[in-house]
Image 1 (tube, rainbow, N blue to C red):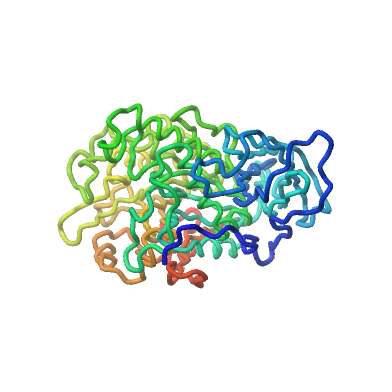
Image 2: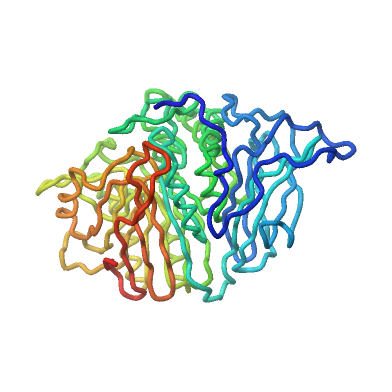
Length: 534
């Protein structure tokens, strides 16, 4: 089935279960237009839902983006070419009887009519409800979202439930995994890249069942195109449910701009004969990314540059070190041909992080007082041989294309005495779990940390538990403990003693409404590096 015009959000976008919150995108009341107010909007502007992110002990970012027509090709979302005043409210209850903050913000056309409200001075470790309103002849009220602040800086706090996900190709399936993730009621969601895909309709076809719906517009290369594509994804009710249930911490991978781009090197040189042309495309993509994510003003782009690597603390339980492995990397080795095994990938000067980010990561992990050092990043970190048997072949777009950079980080973890490092990754559309060792080619090399890789939300289509390369992957990669090709996400439950990871899977994404189950679970004990089957 192929849908040329996706359905607009439905009331199903509301979170479910214990945290169900009230108030949809309804139009409430009449006669609320005050003297001198701007002309009213022609309909509900909250078609893209709400979101929050960047939780700190005393604050959070509240987000929305106004769009009367989410799929408008000019990227304006059917909005007038003027600023629109937006009211926001924060409450300790979902009925807004115990409001603690309210204010006004301006949704401006130069920021795609997005709103980023940065709050501070809130109580640590507290759950809040929030919503937005726009006044006119009638008052439009957004869906209600749920967010929370991090524990106090030196607090031990309680356990943390954190879900992480990646890779949501709109055409490849229904976003049911987002709905199931919302039903897990996590405290925080970590998204590890490929939030949108840049392809024109049907340029990237899912194996098996094929595409179930179509992208709107051509391949994204302009600001209008990226805005339209983000709006199409944000209009999905299942994605809205996942955003409304908890604050998100986000980073990007490649498809937010273009497949496998490296810094300012495009995947294909033909469409981009000049550096200036790709720089303009990256600037447009970064601008749209900021507009559509619950990020702080510190992340607002400056042309084709956006400072995305950053650190967030969850009391003394966990430090989240969020990386950017796209913006500063060298071009992939071997002409980015998969698989590759040439000597170029081992050159000592090659980097996927850049020198500044590498030093920032190691210094931050070494200086942290938290029990768990959680590194949220994009592409697979562990060495991974994809060629069955004695031959060797690696993914040049992953850390296997930048082995010296990886080795410096592994060595730095050991030499600086970093305890309980956990690397979280996405990108490869499969669930993987692996021990991290300094010398993966040596069978006796002891783990120094672990890597958990989430599969895709939809990318790659339905997939399946049994697939051709799984057994050979496990045999050829002794540090690998799990390989699974279904769609889903990972839920982690973190306390002082252990981190438990449940690899959640759906049977299919080619039909909406699939149920979710746990394919495998692993535990990492604090102070004892290495994965244990739960």
